[in-house]
Each structure stands twice: as C-alpha cells, then as structure tokens.
Image (cartoon, rainbow, N blue to C red; front, side, top):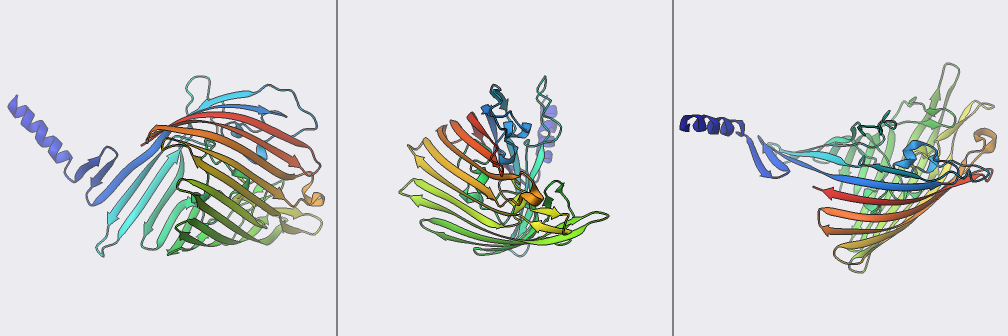
Amino acid sequence: MKHTLKKVTGAVTLALTGFAMASANAATIGSTDVKFTGYVKADAIYSDYSNGEGHPLNRDFYVPSTIAVGATDDGMSGRFDGHVRQSRFRFATETPTDDGDSITGVLEFDFMVTKGDYDNERISNSYLPRMRHAFLKYKNWLVGQTWTTFMDVNALPESLDFIGTTDGVIFGRQMMVRYTQGGLEVALENPETTVVGVGATDDNTVPDIIAAYTMKQDWGHVKVAGMFRQLAYETESIDASDSAVGISITSKIKVGATDDVRLSFYTGSGIGRYAALNAAQGAVYNAATGELEAIDSTGYAIAYRHVWSDKARSSVMFSAFDVDVDTATMGDYTSKTYSARINYLYSPTKAITVGGEYAYAKRELESGIDGDMSRVQFSAKYAF
C-alpha cells in the first residue's frame, strides 16, 4: 500500500512539474502565466412587437434593423425566450521575454449569433461556440482579432441587453494590426463593404485605416477616432468603388463619487457596418451612373448610471440612428431607429448580479412606415 501510494504521489508530482496552480482560475505553465475567466449568464426575455418578431436574432438581443415594420399593427401576441447564449469563457496568457518585456495572448468565446441553431430548442438547446477575440500583444503592437479601434468599449453602458445603446454606438470586432503609444492608437483593420440589395461584398483591396486618441483625466475620459476606408463592389460586369470617412467621439464622465454619464456620437459617409450593428449598408450601387455611392449616417447615445448602494445600481439610456436616404437608388429604406431602456441591477456578492430591464425601440422607413418593440428582460449572471 505504501509502495503504491509512493508511486501515485510521484506520478502526480511529475505531472505537475512546470504547472503550478496560482488560484482557482489561474496557473503557471513553464514560464507562462495562464488565467481563465468568464461568466455564466441566464436571460429571460419577453418581447412584444407591433408587426411581428422579424428576424429571430432580434429575440436574443436588440438588433435595430431587424424590427419588422408595417402600415398597421398585426395584433400578434408577445414572445418569450430563455437562453444562456451570452455566457462566455476567456483564456489570457502572459509570457516573459528575455529582454524584460512580456507577450500577452487572449482567446475568448461565447455562444451568440451562431449559425443554424435557432430551431434547436425542442430538446437539447445546444449552441455552437464562436470566437470573439484572438490576439497577441507585444510591446506597443497588437496583432489579431479584437474590438475595432473605431470603438470605445469603456463608454458602453451597463445593460442586460447584449449592447444596450445599440443605435448610437460603434460596435465591431475584426482582424487588425494596431500600434499604441500612450493615448494614441493607429490601426490597419480587415475591410468589408456592405451594399444595399447585395449585402457583404468582400471586394476590398486595401485595409481600413483607423486612428484614435484617448485623453484620460480624473473626471473620466474622452476618445476621438477617425476612419478612412475603401468601399468596393465588383462582379463580372461591375467594377465600382468609393471612399468612406467617419468620426466618432465618446466619453465617460464621473458625476459625484459613484455616478457617471456615458456619451457617444458618430457621423460620416460610408460608416455602414461599423454603426448600429449595420443598420444601414455602407454604400448603394447606382445602376444609372455605374457608380458606388457612400451612404451618410449619424448616431448618438447617452446613458446615466446611478449607484443606489454598494450592491445596487441603475442605468437610464437613449440612443438613435439616422440615415440620409436616397429613394431613387435605395428605395423605401430604413431612415431612422431609436431605443430607450432603464434597468435595476443588484449584486448580493461581487461575483453575482441579478436584475431587470425594460426597453422600447422603434424603426421607421423613409416612407413613414414603422414598427416598434417593447421588451422586459430579467438576467442572472455569475462572473468568475
């Protein structure tokens, strides 16, 4: 028995050589520190639509362009959905180098927007994982997929919805090469043109160019970002292109000891997929002239966060999106969307948050035909 125990102990010791546990979700493998974090989030959502549910994606989280529109209310009853799709896990590594620096690696997954599983609620409710982030950082350089440099994650509000102020914020993740020096960021990012009536074309020949500067102060921060990119659409008979320029200004401002205001504004020509979850395409092809024409759009958002106690807080949010519609080439296209929401979140412990949120959203076409959505959402989240 002693001999067997000694062999088992030796085997375990050998297996753990070079692998030292630092905590429940951290470890060291060789010279690399590894950390595993994430959260489990359960959502219960009741939605009432004036003109039907539209795209099923909108039942999981708010997507402005998917709200169905119609001349009259269709009288359909509401929809209830329960899911854990927002749950995610993240691996982060830190490896020291011989010159005294370190290399950071990040790989993160969740279960949102995965293809082909919307009819899978009969028995198993199985969701495919999707990659959110995969990048490395070394000195001033970042290479890989993460939040676009045109976006400001720190200005997003605390919302039970996946984004919250969706209409009025820049949102996206993509492959890039980014250089950072202090508050300045310059990046070359993966391009993709979206065209009215066509969708994504993937015909670009050069990357999107984005530069941003973030000023941090005791009262909060301000980020100004600019983007220049090519819009391209090519077929056997069409070879058209245009340029796109956009600017984004975001801020988070402290109010008193605990509260804050979060602001977002963007405008430009050909912003397209970067804004409001691609509520408008980046360009429209004018068959009469044979030219690709960038579409102008503007959006803004404001959110106020009030802390009731060390365990409770609420946020009130409003966001809007507006498109300059040319009906001659675009037809009866989305002209504006907006949404408002209010929530109450309670954390009995640091790792657990429960809460409720009410949201109202509306989408309107250039002709005046519209549709709206009212939603109540309850969530429970365990972060580790």
